[in-house]
Length: 319
Image 1 (cartoon, rainbow, N blue to C red):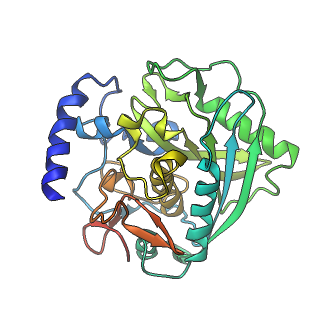
Image 2: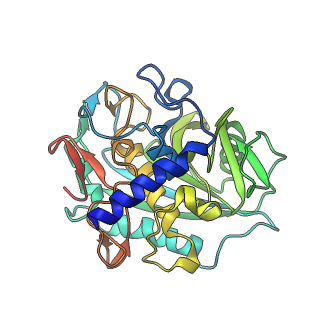
């Protein structure tokens, strides 16, 4: 497996040369941190072309902000009429959130790495709950951004994503706003998005997390584009839940954003000297993969990237 990965890495360096992406982040501007965008998952090609902001280096340091000592997740599937998600896509993602919740308290999966981090109120517990899912059939607004990905048919700006979350909250679909909840917004296949000019889904990133006010309460949200819109950019090729569901690639980058929303929910808690969060530092690093998966959570198999462990000064698959 080591030699296969080395060969793939070399290939990605060659392929990445033509990828349209923003300038690599600097210590003063790691990805979109200066505009409130956190935990950007670089595309596979961008990561290996030097535009990713993870990798090794210094441990995470604490910057005084809050962590989510316990956390709750809500999945929102924004699928208007005429837009598609593969059969099994949303149900497999919801299964994943439920499995992570059911395994709370254990030490056998990547979420248990988070328990070494803390804030002024105490340490993070592996204590997750799943608040269920919402199907959103509201039509997409007219493109609020412009990307260069031929597969996309509409482009959502970050402000449009926030507006939709606020609209849903106003309808009562999301229930009471909860500061310990991360709302994951999954868009349909062939829907693009950008959080800044030139920093767009499938050419620069595969997902990110940020914050939005719902009824005066600041909550976490994650923009989760449909990863297999462009598999070469956002799919590592592991499909333990079946390639036809097209869910596994999205689950991997979802796990990245979920974990970062736990130990850096407001962008002012745990990150390294370059601004990279714990999952950023291990993006596209899966460790040991056997039979196409590296995690068994509540009896189901998943292929998830590793998480940075300060205790090991490296990436880890479990606590």
